[in-house]
Length: 435
Ligand SMILES: Nc1ncnc2c1ncn2[C@@H]1O[C@H](COP(=O)(O)OP(=O)(O)O)[C@@H](O)[C@H]1O
Ligand SMILES: [Mg+2]
Image 1 (tube, protein in one colour):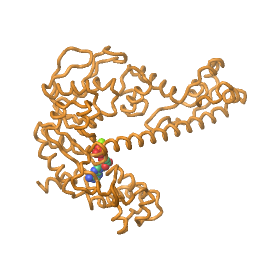
Image 2 (cartoon, rainbow, N blue to C red; image 1 turned 180 degrees about the vertical axis):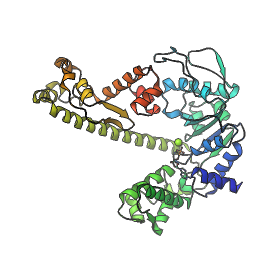
Image 3 (cartoon, rainbow, N blue to C red; image 1 turned 120 degrees about the horizontal axis):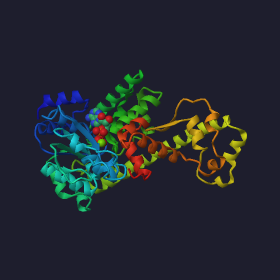
């Protein structure tokens, strides 16, 4: 192992830790970088897989060309092929212009396919072809195109299990896995846990100009005994939470426990976790990981929905206070609405008095504009009562309008709506917009 090169890489990419398994993964990345070999990075969620493809690209002969990181798990199945391989204008509803696709634009560069285990089988077939021959075909076209792209993929999925279950092509797996890099889970990294805690505590103290939190001896010991299911991502979040919320700057084991850190060294779980030969990608570990991630996602999306609803309800109440008492009564006491899902005042009224912009946090009310009664002169009360717009419908409408305005260009629409492209795709899928 080239210790000096590894240390330089750590410094450059802000990687903290001296655990041998971590050094080994960086070492393999450095060695494989100048080659054209495909690399598959394997490790649990939150272990730090995403820096390695960047290290590989930056240390390869392709470093002056494009690097794209694509999360295969977040691209809707309906658009993933056109995202990766491009499409021809008119090849499906919503294909309003030609799209080059990542394999086209990343020519001579590197593509990082994160969560590659989530790729649909049809896309896997296309991917295998481009990996083997450098050839691909855009959706809706028959012309064969050439590209020269280096692939680095990552997964937290047990690929052997996915292959057994027929969810992942074995031939593609072997093609991607020319060089495997395994990134160790945090619970195996011993004293690195404390180093990482110190780094995150320092970062957050700098950011908010607060005194960094410190660990007592018993707290240090407890960090070593916890199993860290969310790995470094979880440790970072925990450190940030404690730094901001805790009144104390000296963090004891007792305080850590209040934040959910448990002593997992006893009993069955402890035995499994501390076994050196533990297969972290065992079927059990994987399904547990998946469920946990899904639950987190679910909880966070429920949280967002509630926040959206609160904001909408508050702004509508404001809005309605400006409207006549009579209208207020009609909107709120309409018998047909009793027990029905929350519904909102007339869309034109809302939009003209409170234009909403969607972003990753959901709807954000813009600064209030004067309530202009001229704008709502033509409002037909019958329509108001029949077609109140829900939060979701309003968002859907914003998306459709924005896509129209931008001739179907999702990049521009996402920028206009102040949401990431990924969020836009998810919403297009969620709302069943066949775009
Ligand atoms: N060794 C490390 N030192 C510092 N930060 C790290 C380290 N490993 C991971 N991180 C941070 O933890 C977070 C999760 O890493 P990420 O690469 O997104 O995980 P994964 O892709 O494996 O789920 C990121 O914010 C990353 O910067
Ligand atoms: Mg990741």
